Length: 392
Image (cartoon, rainbow, N blue to C red):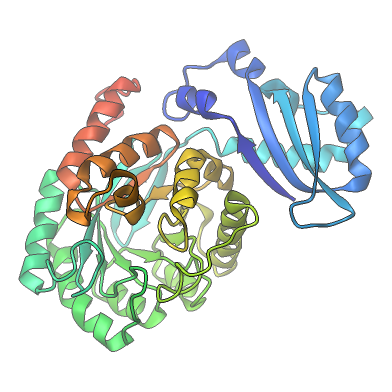
């Protein structure tokens, strides 16, 4: 079964960073839950349980086309999921699964252990600065291709408030060709080696190759950012476990060369959740602690304009995975399509995604323009009730 928490923005806004909804307000708040793939023989019991809690239930055919399963939309007060009577023991496992999913909605602080450097995420949104050491990245290709330029920009990002620096040596823009691991290593290792020694913040390596990741980790990187979500190279999970570093799992559809061709989804958010759950299971089976896994919905990776907007509007649904959420919408094509702007004119659009993303549960914002995004986050923090102590 797949559980999705829907229509939950108001509660999320109240409770995700600083819980303003306590007591009866929180318990009586209506929660909309979509449970996919419920066995047909449990549907009648679910319906009786919903009615006993003065809730509402809608029954749909399974999105996967199964004749012996149904998708259920339940609207119930939060308190309904706290306990279940013996009368409905038949669906206790389903209710317990919903209860576990709801735990992810309430943001909790997690400490990421990044190769000797730590970073707390949860209460305060964090900023990851992008350093593309490539000649052909979609946004800043060639700008930081020289080692000294990349290092100088990374130092500037940290001065502007970046909490993480993400270094990549292979472009993943739509239509791009892959590069050999040795080329990627040659591009990033000199930069990571120096930044990891001289900067106080963690350095992340943006790669899908275990050979590249190992070279970066040996050079001092403290995080792996895998755009394939552990669907291309399973050895990345073993490396994250062995080096005791966090790993970002992103959703993508196909390789960069062809990912924008023939884009079709039966149920976009459901498919993203399933894909990320698979990656999480691989990571944990390899020994990566569950609190060292970050998820990313993959804005722009095998997605249409409408797909990207749907992700933004439903970003908080990733909270059911109970992992920090990273959002990488900076300067992406969907912003350009909405505003009719070239890539170097998309700052304001990016800032809108940052503000909206944080209000919808994003914990880490991956951006090119650090200073401006940090300012947006600082303002949002204060408007959301975070005081100086929380901002440390």
